[in-house]
Image (tube, rainbow, N blue to C red; front, side):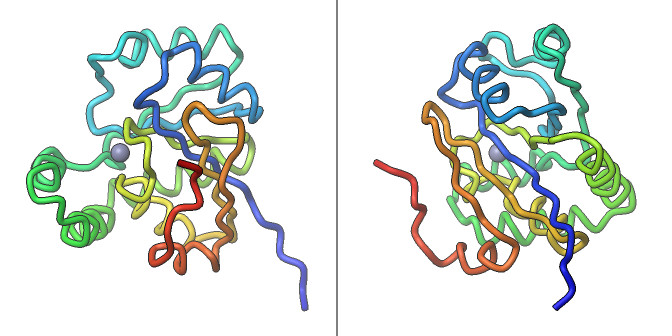
Length: 177
Ligand SMILES: [Zn+2]
């Protein structure tokens, strides 16, 4: 069988982390490029609004890129918060991600991840209930990639290979309680 080069892309949710803890996690996993995929790069949490975060990352030698179109549109975000209907949320996201600007941004993320160890960021601690899931699914449809989810406040990561990824939707998270 031919050996295919497999890229690795990380994801992280900053909910529950202080800015220091967040930065420590990124450094621990040698992240070189943070990819912010919040629709609006603002936060009530100190240190996570775009400017503050970008400055801190720069000081740590980590690049920052924001892709608005890879964020979940407010209408879907608010709906899923009410209904907890993730199936509907993810299918709305799948549709959203077919728009040309979103496709372009996906390609930009893929390019960044080729030259730098990159990490996708959203607020949500649990990637399985976050729009990171449909985003990484689309990326995984385009390139051979292994996703690693950096767990909040813990020293280890969960690895999902491309093939495992689809299966993982039906399995329980391996995260320790
Ligand atoms: Zn999220």
